[in-house]
Image (cartoon, rainbow, N blue to C red):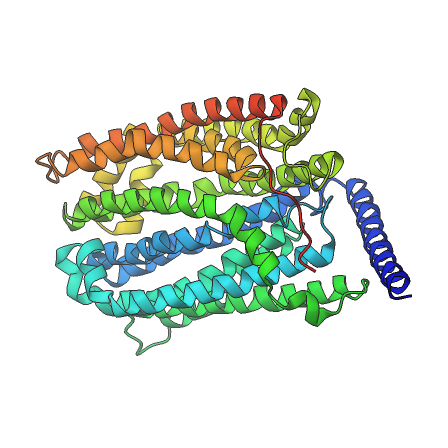
Length: 511
């Protein structure tokens, strides 16, 4: 009698799971028939992502303009926020960058499981971000000594302490942003940045702009406080928006909101299984980068300011198309990988893919590759022949000397970023399918090329006059080398998958 009851209960559970999966298949079919501008389609997601990445790029540029007008010597200090962000990238590119193989798998996982994975990621990231913020605040003096030019070190300690808590909000934003893109909700990351920029415009105009209220004497610390407030507002907006949308999605399923939003071990285990590779990759890459940055800061305020301005220009507005196409490519490669995994079986550890299957999986990345190639070529021609870089650098730094150095940097290695843009799109194939391969290609680039240079700069007699002779080979060369490596590793990944030798983790639903 008991065994019959157990059989009926088990059968009812299986029937419920089958019904849920049927609803998922119907939902996926509807998504495939959506208009091209829909957020569930590749080109539609690009439109959302462009708006999302454009807003913080605009603010990053404006913030340097404001600080340059307040105190030109403190422009390099604002890069402390960037370097704090480099440390934060290790946790923000760890678990969040691995979500596209799990949360992005809408063919084999139920919506309840994908939402539960997102909440688990959110709780974990918030905890890690808070811990890192406390560490930065406690070590503000040591951090300033390493990453801020000596001329402004003492004045930068308060700036670092204020900026340290941005790590908490960036960790939350990274969790919400990556997971909601994997859930085909790029409107949520857009809401995060829209809220932050809206608050930013109000506070900037009132406190630090040229039309600010009379009697207010802003400092670089004022700008740091404003940025922290904006990051906090953005994180709050993103979390609330996600809670609202997830509640609406779960209302159509038999799973309760409480069960789906409660973090659990199964969800964390699946996130860690994918995220350990992206975490290791980010830790190695950023550790070597910070090693080199500490050397750049020691070259003095002018050189450090020029490097910061160069990065603001290159990694600001100009990088928006690259980041937008990467976000769409990794999302839809993850979807197509999930479709194939669902076809071969959730429990299969090794499966042989046909060439047509591999082509379907990599198609979004190839589209992004072609689009970004023409965009980067066009930008390179325009910026190389108009001579606008020096003028822009002067506005950002309020220094003729720093602007001249920035122009020199730009002319010598800007072409290398075309290779970076292309390799970024190709890397999404590995990132959204088997992150361990993503780790392999990064280790090849960083250990074989960047690490030897990190050791070499400690032995070379470098100064502000000859430093760029070496740094252009380090930073520009690494971009070209990385492109060659990613092409080779992608090819090996495809051959390995075609031969059935690639090992894949089984798929488990967390709720």
